[in-house]
Length: 390
Image (cartoon, rainbow, N blue to C red; front, side, top):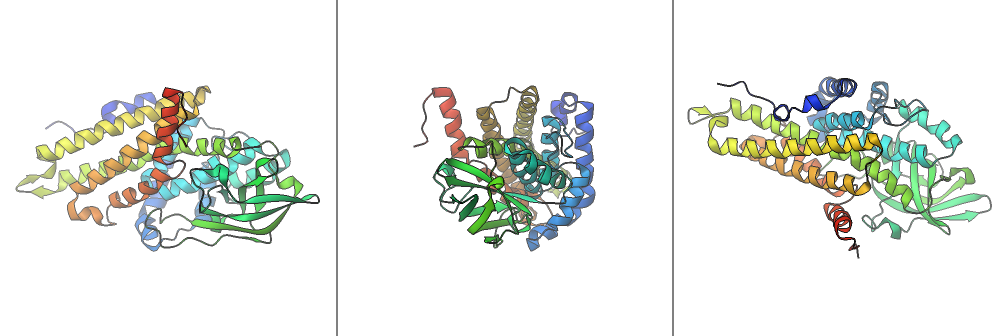
C-alpha cells in the first residue's frame, strides 16, 4: 500500500515557502500544539479564555503586529503573518481573531493613521501583549454599511465628546484601548480611546454558538470626553477603517485554510482508523471521493493564499484580490468542515473532535470582515465596472 501523503503535501506546498517564513510558521504551530490545543474544547464549552494571559504569551511569541515595522513589532513578511494566522486558526478561529484584531485592526490603525505620540504610547505595549486593543466600527444596525453609523463625535472646546454604540467587537471587554470610528462634521474620523475613560463600557456578549473561545462585546460610549490628541490625524473618511479591514481580511484568507486543513486531516485520520463492515472507512470509494474533492479545494485555496501573500510582499496586492481570497477560502473551508463532519458520523458533533467547532466558528468568519455577498459585489464591480451595492 502506498505511503499516504498529507493533502497539502500532495500539492508540494513546502517548496513554495521560504526557509524563514517556514520557521516562523513552525514556531506558531508548536505553540498551538503545546499551549492552545489541550484547552480548546474546555474554552469553547465554557465560552471563556484567559485572554490577558494568552496575550502576554502571544506577545513573547512575537505574533502581535508581527507584519508591522518598528515600535517593538517583528517586521516579518506578509506571507509569514499569513502562515501564522493559518496555524492559529487551525487551532481555533477565536484565537486567530484575538491576534488579528490586535495586530491587523487596532495596531495597524494606529501604525498607519496615528500620530507619533499615539504610536509610541500604544504600539510597544500592544506588541508585547501588555495592552490589548479592540476596533469599534460595526454598530447594531450598521454592519455592511458602516458609512451610515450613528456613533458621533462633537467638538466641545478643545475636546471631543463621543456618543454611540458598537456591536460584535472582539476583545472589547478585556481591551485597554479601543480604536473607535465616529461621524464628525469633517467626515468619519478615528479616535484612540483608553477603555478606562469615564463613559466607556464594554459588556460582554453571551450565549454565542460560534467563536466561543473568544471575547465578543458591545461598546457603549456615553459622553466619552477625549483630548484633541485622541483623534487619528491621518484618517479621514471611510478609507481609514476600510484599510484596516483589508489587513484583517488578508489574515482570514490564510486562517480559513488552517481551519479546513485541521478538519480534513482529522477526517482522514478518523476514516483510516474507523473499521466498518470489515475494513477501514477510508478504503471505501464513497469516502475517498469526498476526501479527494476536499483535498483539491484545500490545495487550491492554499495556492491562492500563497499567491496573494507574495503579491502583498511585493506591494502589488489590490483590495478586490483580498476579496477573492476571503470569499473563496472561507466558503470552501466551511464546505470542507461540513463534509468532514459527515465522515465522522455522530462523533462529528462531539467536542472530542474539532470539526463541528471549526464549522460553527467559520459561520462567523463567513460574515465578519465583509459578508460573502459584499465580497461578491466587490468582485462583480471589478469585472463589470458597475457598482451594485445599492
